[in-house]
Image (cartoon, rainbow, N blue to C red; front, side, top):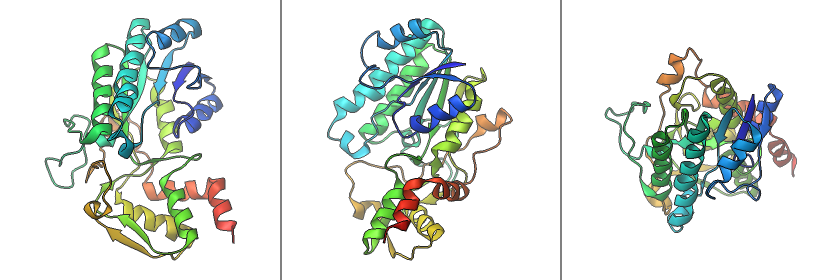
Length: 292
């Protein structure tokens, strides 16, 4: 299958593209300087020229805190870019897989501790979450055959991510302060990429929640990273309020994958199992631990 991958240089795209190719797909992944998804007609022209059968849109403005000071830039990519991609897919009749986020669920679930289902109404907080929800709505309204996929707490094999940030901070020494009142599900990009490839081969269009199994806080995530590599660095839990980040974060954004299970697919692996496999396969982790 010939697949157009947008945002192929991002955290997910860098793992998804090679995985798709290993499984026999042809991947067209133009760099950002060669294709601006926010330029009117750019994606439509590429679809006409390349003859692709699926489009995967991983492109996004993802700096949550900076978005508060740059709402126009966040809106341009997350809403307008998504809209133009979806409209091009609708015009060409090409199915679109659009990646979104747990951040659209900024409120409290109807039952304490109940994971968010695909059918739950989103309530985004902050610029990043609001622009990502606007992008979702643009895709849904476009009429394109759509896989709308939400994921959470993503970390990948290449590029900056939470586990590497924690390990680098631990190697510098001192006590780490990590937020403990935000709960979600860490998701390894390789596990998500595997699920996306399986989904793309279907025509079961709809909204899907695809994230790691189980749940934890950022504090628990950090503690597990250190424990799994044998570091005894002290970690102090702090509240979101005391941390003082510019953008609001969901306090509980665990996702429930009802629609994925209805396809007969197994859930994504538990987040601690995924983290163990990631730490054992990431060259940057090996280098960090080897440094004196």
